[in-house]
Length: 93
Image (cartoon, rainbow, N blue to C red):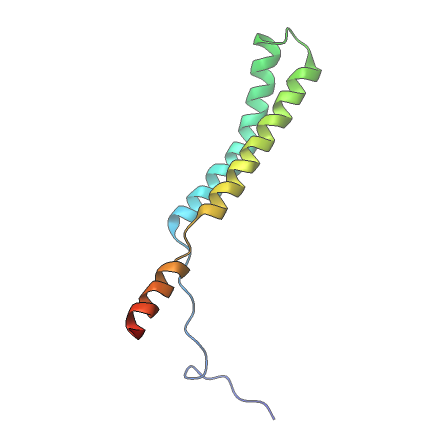
């Protein structure tokens, strides 16, 4: 026996992610593609005198910095759960 799914038995959908989440994802996606390539070619011609090994190492470092930045901003993003917990605490008082 299964319970039929009706609108009265289904919970409300959660809030949609904010537009800034999509913007942040797009920014870091483009940065992860563009920044290492730009660092490679810029450093190869300007700093390392045509040495591709050092330029490739710098490009890898730049890619890791961009990835680390995305992880940090994702961890620091406020999901609203703390604010909701504070509201529930105030209501119970």
